[in-house]
Length: 341
Image 1 (tube, helix red, strand yellow):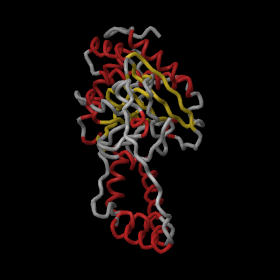
Image 2 (cartoon, rainbow, N blue to C red; image 1 turned 135 degrees about the vertical axis):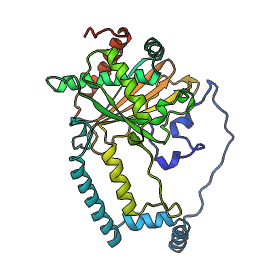
Image 3 (cartoon, rainbow, N blue to C red; image 1 turned 180 degrees about the horizontal axis):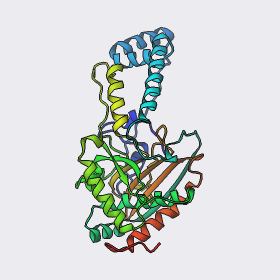
C-alpha cells in the first residue's frame, strides 16, 4: 500500500508512487545511473531570505498561512468557518436532503478496510443481456451490497427506500473505458449524485431502476457537483462570502450518503517481472460519511474496496460476501424475473 499527497500527483505528468514502481511490461525498464549528493545545510539567514522570497513568489500560500495559521486573522476565519458549518447543518435538516441513514452518523477515527472482486466478463454479459451500460451493472451490484448490509442492521427495508451516492460524471461517458489505461488514480472532475433503490428486492428491476436514475441525474444540473474553483486564481483563494454562498448551494442541493470512486480500465502492471495480481484504490472517507467505495477494472476482474468507520459499520468484512451474493443474483436473474432470494 502506498500513500501520496494529492499535490504530488496533480496533472497529467505526475503519477502516484505505486504507478511509478510498476512497469507496463514484464521486462523492467533500465534506468540510467543518477548520482545525487546533498548540499550544505542552509544557515538561518539564508532560510529567512528564502522564506520571504517564496512568500512573495507565492501569494496564495501566504494568504493561506494567514487564514489557517496561528494568529488573529486565522482565529476570525475559524469562527466564521464554524458558524457557516453550524448554519449549514441546521438549514440542511429543513430542506430536501439525502435519505436518513446511519452511514451519515458522526464518525470516529477508527477505520476498517476490506476488498472483493467479481468477474469483468460476467459484468459485460449482464450489461448486454439487460441492454444497459457496464457501470450500470456495477452500481446495481453496489445497490445489492448496501441492501444486504441494511437488512443486517435493521429489521426490514421499505420497498421505496434508497441510498444516495455521489460518483464521477465520466462514469456515464461511453468513452470512460478508454480513460486511465495505465493509471488507477481517480481523475478530478465534476460529479453527480444518484439514488440506488435498495428497497427493491428484484435484482433485474433494481438494475433497470439504477440505469434509468443514473441517466436522468447525470444530465441534471441540480445533481451535478462541479469542483469549486478559485475566483482569484493569482491568490489561489475564494473570498469567504462567495465561498459560503456556493458551498451552501452545493450542500443543500447535492447531499449524499456514500461516495463511490470509479477508475477506467487499467492495463496489466508488473513488478520486477511479476504481474501485479490485484489493484485496489483506498477510497476517501469524507466528513459525516461512514462508508466509501472504490471500483477498479483490472485484468479480468472488477475490484471493489470498502473503507468504513469501525463504530458504524463494524461488520465491514461481510461486505465481501455481500458483493458476491449481490452479483450472483444479478448474474442469474433474467429481465423481468423476480428475485429468488
